[in-house]
Image 1 (cartoon, rainbow, N blue to C red):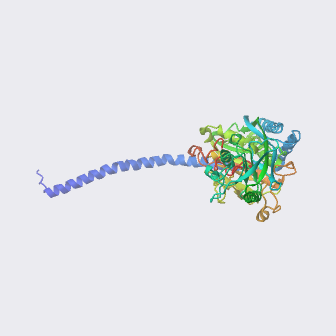
Image 2: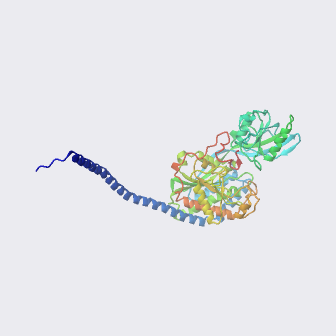
Length: 555
C-alpha cells in the first residue's frame, strides 16, 4: 500500500512539531528526574531537619530546667560564706588581697581548693607583672605665690627624685578640635626645654601626651581634666613612661594656665613630685572547667579576685568572685547528683582573674596566649565586677549600644547576652540600665578578640541620680559605693538584695548557656578581632578597650 507524499509545508510543520516534541521530552525528562530527586531528597531531609529541630528544642528545655535549679539553689547567703573567707584572708594578710601579695595567693588557693574538690579541672595560670605602689604625688606652685595643687600621679609614670623637680610651667596650646599636646606641631610655637608641660586632656592617650612633651624637651607633664572631677589616669604600661606625669582637675589646670599666661617673663614655677615603687612580681589566674561538654563551644564566666592594696576588696571584687565560685559549686553539685553537669552540651569554664586592678593584666595574659583557633571555641564571656554595692544600681553591659554613648557595641552576640540578663533581672522585679563597655573590667581583652561579652555591675564611685533612686531605692547624690578602693570595703559594705539578684543572674546564665548558645554566632565565623589591640609602649590605642584600662583612664 502506498502512502501519499505530504507537501513540503506540511512536512516542515510535522518536523517542527516533532522537534518540539523531542525537545519537550528532553526537557521534561530531567525535570521529572529532578522533581523526583527533589521529592526524594526532601523526604530524606525532612526527618533530618525535624531531628535537628528536636535536638535544639531539647537543649533549650534542658537549659531551662538547669537554670531553674541553679537559680533556686544559688543564693547570696551561700555566696556570703566566701565573702567572709576572703575577709578573713585579707585580715591575716596585711589587710588586702592585691595581686602578688600573700592575700591574693591565699585567696587563689582557697578558691582553687574548693573548685578542685568539686570535681573541676583546675589550673593556676602563672604570669609576671609590674607591681606598682604610689610613694608620693604632689604639685606645689612656688612662684609668684606658693600654694598646693591636688595631683594624682599617672600609674606607671617615671618617678622624680625624692623631693621632686623644680621647673617653670609651659602651657601647651589647645587646638580647635579640643586636643592638646598630641603632635610635635603642638610644641612648635613655644619653649619647653627643661620645663613642665601643662597639657589639657583630650585627643589622644596620656602616654602619647607625655611622650610628645618629652620629645619637645619637657622634664615633666601635668595633664588637666576636660570635665569635672579629679583625673585618675594611667600610661598603660611601664614601657610607655618617658617623663614624670600626673593629673589635676580642670579648674586647677585652667587657673594654672591663666596664671602662667599672665606671668610674663617670670611665669609660674612649680615643684612636681611623683614617685612610684615598681617591681616585677608573680601572680596567678585561677581557671576551672567542667570535665564534660563540647570543648569547641565553651561558655566562659569570670570575675577578678584581686583587691587594691588599700583594703580587703569585699565588694570590689570579692562579690563577683564569690558569685562565680558559689555558682560553680552548685553546678558541680547538680552533676554529682546525676542531673545535668556530666551530660550538658557545652563546656563551662570559670575564671578568677588576678591583677585587674593594675590594668586587666590577668585577663589580658589569658587572652593573649590563646591561639586564634582556641579563641574561636569560646562562645561567650560574661564578667561580674562589683555586684553588691551598698547604694546599688542594676547595670548590664550595653552589648548593642542602644544607649548610644561611649565606646560602641560589643562584638556580634553581645546584644543577645545583654537581653538575657535584662530579661532575667525583670523576673526579679528589677529594672536594668545600660553600662558602657568603657574598659573598666576584664571583658576588655575578650571584646578586643571579637568574643561576645556581657555581664552586670552595681556601681563604683559614680553618683546615683534621682531617677535611679526611683528605680532602685537608696540615696540620690551619693556614690554607689562610698568605700570604693578604701579600707572600709569590708563585709559590711554589701547590699544583700543586689548581691542575691546578681548571684542568681550568674546561675541563670550558666544553666542556660551550658546547654544552649543558639542565639550567638558560631565562633568559626567570627572576625579575628573586635577592636584594635593596644600598641606596646604607647599605653593603648584609643579604641582598644574604651577610655579606661581597669580603674584608670587611658586618655
